[in-house]
Amino acid sequence: MTGLIVPPGEGRKLITPMQEVTFKVTAADGSSISVFEVVVPPGFDVGAHSHLHSQELFYVLEGELELFAFEPLKRTEDSWYDWESPEGQRVVRATVGACMFVPPGTPHAFRNPTDKPARMLFQSAPSPDHEKYFEEICQIFDAGGSPSRDAVQDLRDRYDVTQITPLRFEPPATSSDAPPADRATAGTTTGTERVAR
Image (tube, rainbow, N blue to C red; front, top):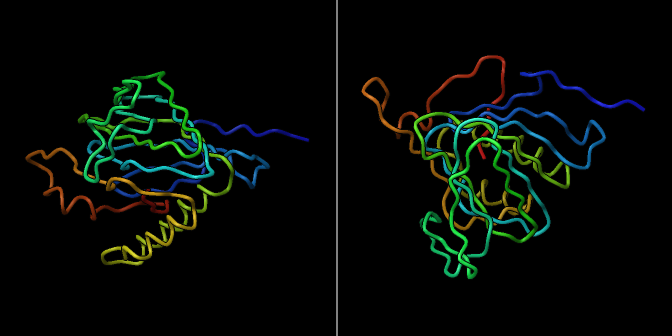
């Protein structure tokens, strides 16, 4: 039996303007846990969501992210930024070395509120559920036009994702950038595939 060593920068990449996901360890490698390296651009918010059966781990490698993993006193449909748990837990500004574990059934989210990309190690079990989720949402976004809400919802239903607040991508505007609405759907990739979470 042999193990697996993945050099820096190696692994299958799926890229959209919203995220860059590199597959590091997968079910095809014999792992029961999927491991990804994820680059989170400024302004990306995955939205609060939960998984009935999956568990996840997030570890900040570079930059800063806002994180939470708890059931709030009150869920709001628009945003999770001000949520608080019955025990007084609140959203955390996580820097390099911070880690978040998410047990099944726990609402959680991450977002990059800064003007610089963040990078994290993301683990999800059981594999290959999240691998397939990334691959299939890539197909939905590559189909062209506005993604079908029904197709995205069907995908979430099949892969144990209950969305609570909306996914958002609102990059900070600079004078040389296109308006945020244009940047969210624009962009090219070279030698990679595209995906959004």
